[in-house]
Length: 257
Image (tube, rainbow, N blue to C red; front, top):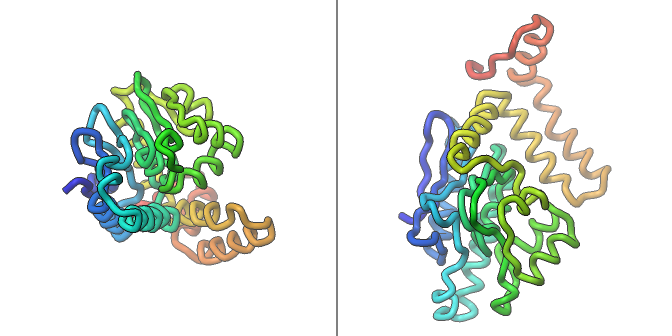
């Protein structure tokens, strides 16, 4: 398999493993969709990390030779599948973290952008959306997710020039949310994920859904989504534990609920 899912101690891992560069084709996207679905259905996983098995590439993006060999209709089927699978992540009430340890270009960066957070490694590698240099546009959500993450003009600049940037620039532009020494990246990402998994996972999932469902909507619509999601929390075990712990001046214990 080129993409596989596993649960390691309550943290879900989706691993991209298609040597040498984790380039993707239709079957890769099918497996990615299956892995995302497995993460969604894994009640024991409190957070999910998307990572690469390669030390040189997070993902170099689409298999360009496959693009060239396919018909336009076949290429659009892959785009539609990618849109479906990556959009699914936004509706899963668990935080997904992309652990970017190496070069992420085109669809590789777009997979990371579909996650809720991106943690990067320091080092000599590049990220970018170079599709314009191929006469194409970033077709796996890049034209929509990158502007929402870093702002329209900065995103447009990166996409129309197709230029590649290093991890420090990715942090400066807010493509990366955190940047760690390469040797610390897996541990630091897991520590963050474990903190979420050991927290009020129902509330954390509701926060994610409220943010995603309200994004781009008028404020009154976003507030309506917020009310819809907070209402059931008031009667939930997490809120009872959190409020009781606050009153008793102790740390809440959400693991045994």
